[in-house]
Length: 236
Image 1: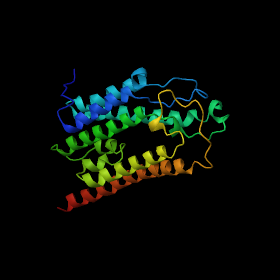
Image 2: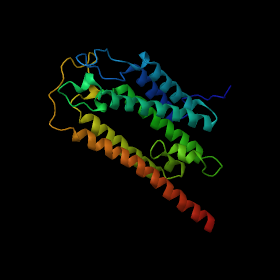
Image 3: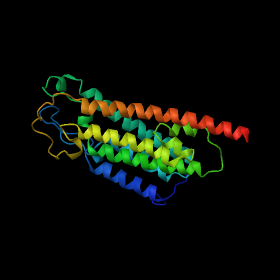
Image 4: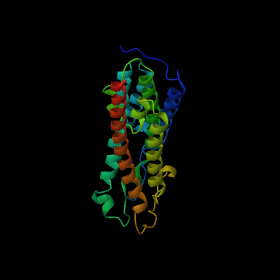
C-alpha cells in the first residue's frame, strides 16, 4: 500500500483539503427546472465529483510524488471532462429549443470551481516538491504543464508560473460572471424562469477563448525556458 502523509502537513495541503470539502458541499450543476427539470447536483451526490475529490486529496497525501502527480492529473481530467460535458449539453434540443443562447459555462456550478481551486493548490504543492528535490527536470515537467503555469514553478519560476495561472483563473471568472445565469451565485432552488436573452454572448466566449490561448502559451513559455536552461547548463 502506498505510504501516506497528513493532508495538513503543509499550508497548500490544508488549502487543498478545504477546497475538496467545499466541492462536496456545493452544487456542480446549475438547476434550470424549465429546461433540465433536475434538482441541484451537489458534489456529495455525484460519483464523478467524489472521484475528483478523492483523487485531489490523494494528490497531497501520497508520499511518492509521481503517484501524487498521477492523482492530480486524474482530478484535472475529470474537471475538464465535466466542463466539456457542459459545453456539449447546451447543444442538445432541450437547450437549443429555448430562446436563451446557452453557453456551457452557464451550467457549471460553484462546486466545480471549488475543486478547480483545490487542483491549483495541489499542483503548486507537487511542483514545489519536485523543485525542492535533488533531481533535474524530467518528464514530470510536461505533465505539470497540463495545469497551466505549474511547470514553470517546477523550473523555479514561481512568479511567472503563478502569473499564467492567475491570468487563466481571471479569464474563467470573467466568463462566468458575464453569464446572465450567474452560476457562481445560483439559488439552491435553481432558476424557475430564464433571464432575458442577451444580445450577444461575446462577454463569455471571448474570455473562454483567451483562457485556452493563455494555457497553450504557458506551455510554449515552458518549452522555451526549458531549452534556455539546458543551453545555460551545457555552456557551464
